[in-house]
Length: 612
Image (cartoon, one colour):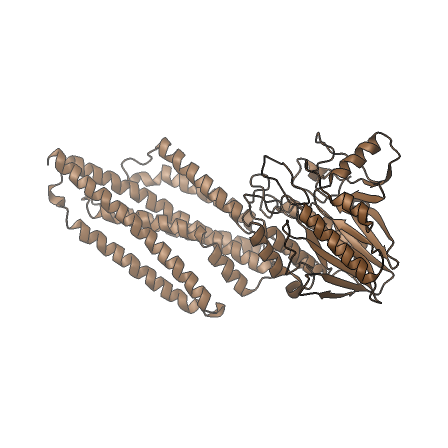
């Protein structure tokens, strides 16, 4: 056979290999889309009926693929292949034989790990059957990718098996079935172990990881020893290809995992009880977007939380759990009528939190608060809608609206918002039982970044200040007097820095109340470089006497400057700042008490003072 004929046959074989790869992708893709289609139109209990249909469709597609191979094989004159072409075919046969055997083991591992983990979340998380099925469909890619690799490699193996004249087909099949049987037996033992050790293994992921590690070592041992009986060249190391594959897999799987919506804290959230609280009347004005809370008590208590920083990933699980437990401790101790969170509820910052997903943390905190039964509201922080986060400000706004008061009866998020700068600006009115306004609570978005560089913080813009002023004037007119109000936002105003510098210099222009500034950064007050008109407008109107913010995790000072109380909240953060998990002095909350005559008090509630 001439050199040109050898190249011709090799070209034909390589072309068929690519056709087989494309067909294998189509098989998995079509089955995946059909599964989702059936999921959308069929009730959960009926899904079992359609699994048979899926298997039939999959088998038919595989049959068509198989038929195309043998149709193609007839085009090749296998009786006249020379030694070089025969060696090429034998080499390809062994290549795909080895891959097929390993893929069989991989598919068994993927299926077992997938089912066990999903079912354990279903059981431990007290989820509904529909939620289990939805999660299984959403995470099916963990099984689909190994399945595609198995189909692709097995199809290629069949192609070269029928071109090769070696007489070891039965022996190769025995090895395939042997790996399959050994894998099933091994994982059956793991499943039985998990069942028997159920009480001592509340979360079986660790058992799966350990079992997977041992499984991989056993497979490697097989590849180095027994597999030599059916291969001439058992191990072929292509460092360049391995490096490329590993790099691509790490990047793609890493990015995909960082985007995933995970609920590792769900078991704890489900255990959170309702906290004793007053059932104040809450109403929502569909035209203005204003919530009104009517209290018949002498005192109305507001708990101020800030910088919770939920990561929502497996990496951040322990810290997320501590953050939620800290929030619950503060809520249970103070039994507030309202919780206000001033930003950075989530921390979708990639490798720092091992997550880009910001909807997961929002759903988890909303579920947590719904279980406590305490009404709550919030302002956005600079980290809540990071540029790389899975959900932008519009998508996150839609999530919050879906979780708001009509659904949860706890989250006071407006369904309509003023047409001004910011992701959310809202007014909440706290009224006495006689209808008089006690205090107006302004929740103002201090925005995030200007886009001019890294950590160049934005500020409260002029149209936001105008909206605030218009609302104060409207309330003054309606009440016939100067109303009392408070403002909440995330990033401090520049006046916070001015007040702190005056305090440091010993000036009598400021009054110190409590707290300390233990910031480790160069800027002890991390505010925007752009001035806002809000503080001067507050002075001019005379309504707002108290302002609360977060952002600086080690700063919780409360200073009065020009008659306005500027208070930093104690942070909850266990995740964002390096080493902050071990620090305790800065962690806690503030309890704001509104009296019936619109006077108020505020005190710090350090976490270490209420936890045992």
